[in-house]
Amino acid sequence: SSPEDALSGESLKDFISSLPSREGWPQTLIQYKGYWFKPGMLEGVLRTRRAFLPRADDVVLATQPKCGTTWLKALAFTVATRSRHGLGAADHPLLTRHAQHLVPFIEIPGAGGGHVDTDTLPSPRLLATHMPMSLLRPETRSLGCRVVYLCRDPKDTLVSRLHFENKLVARAGGAGLSMDDAYDMFCEGFSPYGPFWDHCLEYWEESVARPDTVLFLKYEEIKSDPARVVRRLASFLGVPLTEEEERSGVAEEVARMCSFETLTGLEVNQVGGVSHGNRVHVDNSVFYRKGEVGDWANHMSREMGEKLDRIVQEKLQGSGLVF
Ligand code: A3P
Image (cartoon, rainbow, N blue to C red; front, top):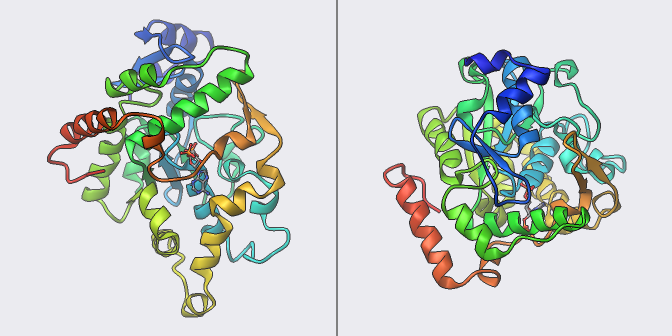
């Protein structure tokens, strides 16, 4: 741990304002232990390092924003709770609550649709985080908490990020960011929770070293065979599909319930929103845009795509992780 792990209140704010900062994204980003954060998010990260108490049976869904967090939350929640919430039930939580609110973030208060106190949740807890592995509490590792990490093609992640930021900015009445500017910053590793590659690499290496505790997934593989990922998730979470469930098509049903088409068709995902502690208002609908693989080609040139691929390839070289 570090001395700043003990800080709270004004001294935490003072510490944050003493860190390197850089302009470019709609909010100034602050650099901490090699990663870039929006100030409110960094406060949450440091609060989590001080106060969050991992439990051995926690399951943590870890992502970088825009890699498919909402989708993973929907899938993992539906799989993990299927004995409690029958898949065909008219009152299934997925039908009336935003997937983002079904699984609370450990470092973002309010994003769970109300200030969920993770300490009071019954075990086993299903939790989410955007935090890099190296910033999670050390107990997450020493207790053997299970982590599901989801990443995505960096080009699509960047395009999704740009649209998300610009929707937030437009809602607040500000001017948007251009693709060219966002691209240059992303390529330098300067993006919220970035560098993109370091975040992926930390979880990747852990998943190679300890595959029982870290399941590494890619957005594109869920897209190409969601039912297969549902089965993998169920096994990893310790609730594998039974033969009866296989026969009755449970994997396919979970995939259908969590699909982009199903979720975007629900009223809860079209109206309403959440105000975060840092005064940012996020509409529920903003977490659903296109939900496709390869949309980058509609927003950047082939040369830009190739250059970003080369940068990421170089950073990941020798790790076995490829996009
Ligand atoms: P696009 O902007 O490319 O459409 P996050 O949840 O991490 O913020 O990621 C948001 C991205 O995941 C958006 O990508 C969004 O459309 C996509 N997404 C959300 N729900 C999805 C689902 N059920 N299936 C596929 N993609 C989904």
